[in-house]
Length: 200
Image (cartoon, rainbow, N blue to C red; front, side, top):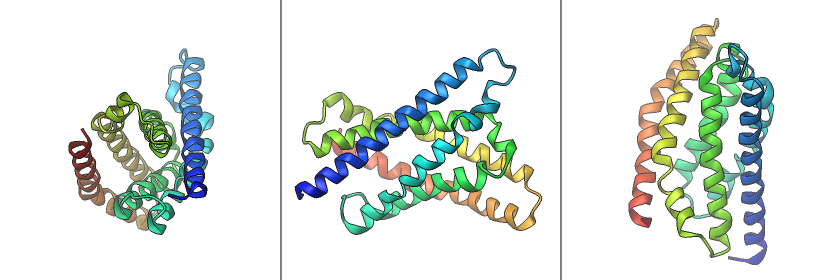
């Protein structure tokens, strides 16, 4: 791998690791400040929503990285995961207050943040050929818990948005997206389990 390509990927992954750490810190700080509120989760979107959208939009570059051969990641799982996360934030959460104010939104961002901090940090070390063993284990084990939390939260938010939608076409599209979750989850989870068996 050329030094220029390696440096770009190190910088990209480091920036995303720092960004997701900042997002998680922002969520936790918000929850601490709002802990006496009757519904502390209801204002997570106001505290962190815009920042989460920017980070996840930047992550779309991963699809280009995989497609251009900059990284060895398979294109289909990368595309599914990255595009699905952007659809959740931009199409499901952003237009619907019912989704924004749901505890599932806070849970979703926390699960995503923890998973992405681990993943991007792993990539930084991997590109430097110096991955600590504990980080390897985390990279290929944390998803076992984090994926169901994240996917369950996404589906919960989708149901909230479906319940709030007044447009029959938008509602139809969201039901179609809901139907894609079982096969999409199977593809992603199977891929990660295969990777875990191969590495650990």
